[in-house]
Figure (cartoon, rainbow, N blue to C red):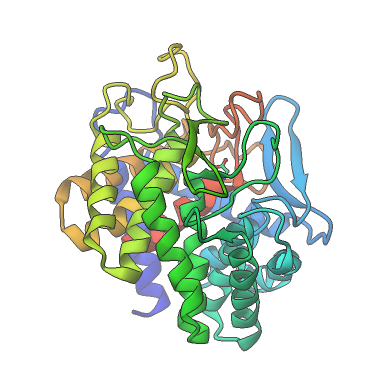
Length: 391
Ligand code: GLY
């Protein structure tokens, strides 16, 4: 497909999804106006200066202060990833030029073994770069990152250790988000031919499958293991309302992570889990009508609780892929609804706010009172990925 037809297809999809928005309670602008809003916001990413010290992660919409982070932050690959995806969506070389400048920002993280987030940091930047430019240097960073991530694998537990903090509380914490880092490992095996990365990814996914889910297919955020025996010590949370609650983004990481793992392995158990958690989420009684979840689906303050657009967009991108394997129309219809919901002026940041973000109303870490109901960069990343996947 040439670029012109692809842009038509994307705009057509935006119109289609806007047309499907019946039943949404909030005010919406016309399709043309909403499309214009998004395009205006896309261009604001180009205005953000290339700065080797910090990447825009989120924004306080009251003070208009942008939170900037160094490469060691788990989100450091997303800005380059957004620029690469915008290049693929629009064909405008300005996004590619900016993406080329931002991609090296997270390169040194390929040798940082301080957390499991090497997958997010390296793959969301260099992985996206590789989809556009077939460069050996991008491949080398991905393989290096996979090697680093494997240093955190304990064969007794059968998992990659997520975090090193809170040592007085946890012995070996593994969080559901960690499923997302497996894509780096699967791709590194394909690039290098070294099966070690893939084997680690499969063992991690199998251990997660065994221990991280409840009978209703919702997932815990954190499982703490005994690193000597491999036994489960605690099923708990850091970012959810409480240990037994349903942190919305965690459910989305699970659906996306197991669907992606199915892509590489064709293990039906992974598909079954992704479908189970997707169904749990889609039919949840606390999910608002527009599908954009409250940050935790068991927050007792619902409906007076902040939403999380980022959870919706991770779920959207994961469900589009899940649809391709199952052809279950309910995934497609639900995801189209999510995409229509966010492409309204309730969620798109107003053009008067000059920042390199597309959407408002994500929630980062509610228990820490951190990034509540704000624009957060990874909501934009998974929205752009979902748009590309819709193609
Ligand atoms: N991986 C961190 C988060 O989802 O907030």
